[in-house]
Length: 132
Image 1 (cartoon, helix red, strand yellow):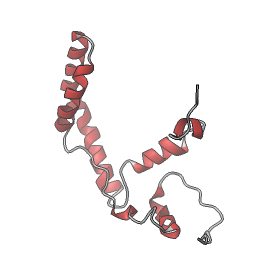
Image 2 (image 1 turned 90 degrees about the vertical axis):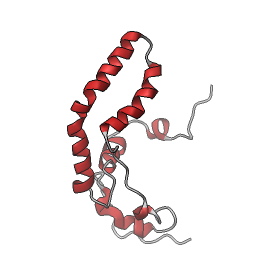
Image 3 (image 1 turned 180 degrees about the horizontal axis):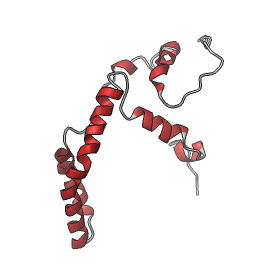
């Protein structure tokens, strides 16, 4: 296949790819063909729902009665602490990012990729491993 001519000599990204969706169209092909039709990343509908899923998974990991009590106490106070954060996530999803991107994308791209200065092959590649 023939490579398409790149429209600019360089594109410098700050991690907010919402203004760079033209690249997906430029590249074309199957890789990005369904990008715009992917569902948005969900936010849990309620904090109580999250805790009802979390607690049965976490309780068996507690190694003592003291840890069980601490976990139950943390889950008791968590809804009050998390209410404002939940509202901010919903606002980020609905107002700041709208329909065109995931509420997590900017954080993921900047903190997960652009700010990390670890050796990429060793820390990111799942196909690279050391033999004994």
